[in-house]
Picture 1 (cartoon, rainbow over the protein chains, first blue to last red):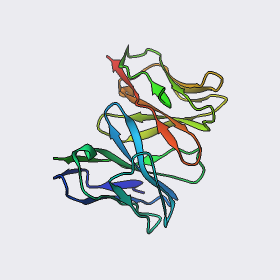
Picture 2 (cartoon, chains in turn cyan, yellow):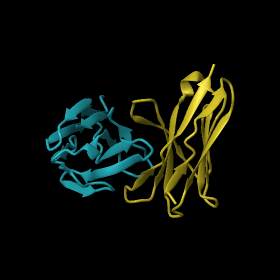
Picture 3 (cartoon, each protein chain N blue to C red):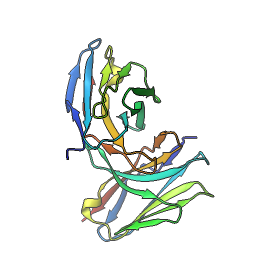
Picture 4 (cartoon, rainbow over the protein chains, first blue to last red):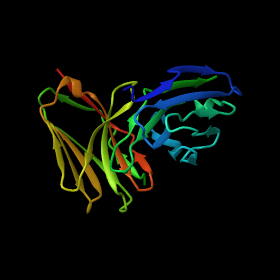
Length: 113
Length: 109
């Protein structure tokens, strides 16, 4: 049981490049989300999904796209990387019922130069 | 005012000490509450949910005060391995979770 798996763990991009951060979970969780964590700002929600085929925007969605074609996978796409997107990105999933907590992936450290 | 506020610390305590953190929240409609632990350069991990009646898990006790809009985390008999950042999380419903910026704890030998 791997939990939530994120790849890559580290990435350096040049401004304007695009890339996809991968996230997969094997717990059959319907709810998945992407957060970014920046110093002094806490985790901020980028996008989330309540099930396959359903996605919605979080607090800071600009510059990012998501899709949810299967229950297991929830990739995050950076369309045209900017230095302001330098951050640590976490994917997380949760079982139904909002009284349960998240299981987080190990994170992707992204630097945009 | 931030939706969720925590004292950033660091709280430096000797081994064996008891330490408590508070977290205040601004939305009285908040529905559920959690404490997460985050080690340096690692992902957050759920420590415990916070129930209205308070709950305990070993050396850790969490309490909720809805009237004053805060939750607390008490750690008894601190261990070196308790050194981490503790994140307060508030659920506003409809999968809206607000994370605090965390309180850093250092347990000293």
